[in-house]
Image (cartoon, rainbow, N blue to C red; front, side, top):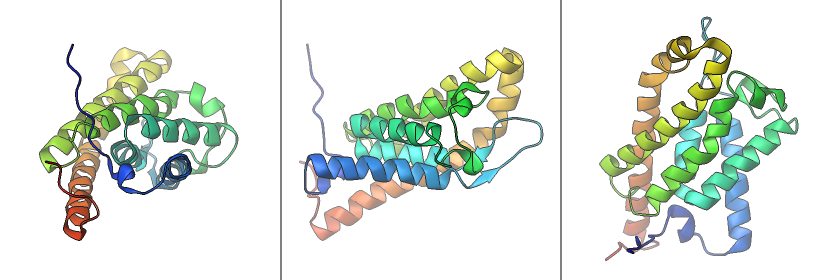
Amino acid sequence: MTTIARTRTLADVVPGTLARDAALVTAGSLLTGILAQAEVRLPWTPVPLTMQPLAVFLVGAALGSRRGALAMLMYLAEGAAGLPFFAGGAAGLAHLMGPTGGYLMGFVPTAFVIGACAERGWDRTPWRAFAAMTLGSLVLFSCGLAQLSKFVGTERALALGLYPFIVGDLLKIAVAAGILPGAWWLLERTGLAPRPR
């Protein structure tokens, strides 16, 4: 049985252990809550356009699989507990049970998958980072559409929860896929993260 070597993520460049991880997980959850406030409501669908996926992509890749997933679990717990962290300042457990709850809960496996890719060095080049984010986006849409379809049916779920968001998600993926390799390049230039051999 072969094992795949784990490379460092951006979070691993930060010195520390448990305290560092707790701070980074908390920061990841807060970033997601902040970007959730950038919201545009479309009149024909219950699913809003938000910047949350960008946060999920960045947090998953920067923190790695486990810490990224923990950050998203913390984000969901914060919003469910009443903090105004869901899209447009919404909060409460009902949002996780509603039509858009699948997208919210999908943040956890999405961050995990993207983080797992980053742990294999996929965040070091734009094209590989783009591939990792695209894979994560497929996970996110699968989770979101599964729950949305229970409210609107499978055929309408695609029209309401996928098609209007493809272009926007590709743009978010492109932004995240540019930020991560750029961050590694800066760290390598400053000597904080030597290039892997």
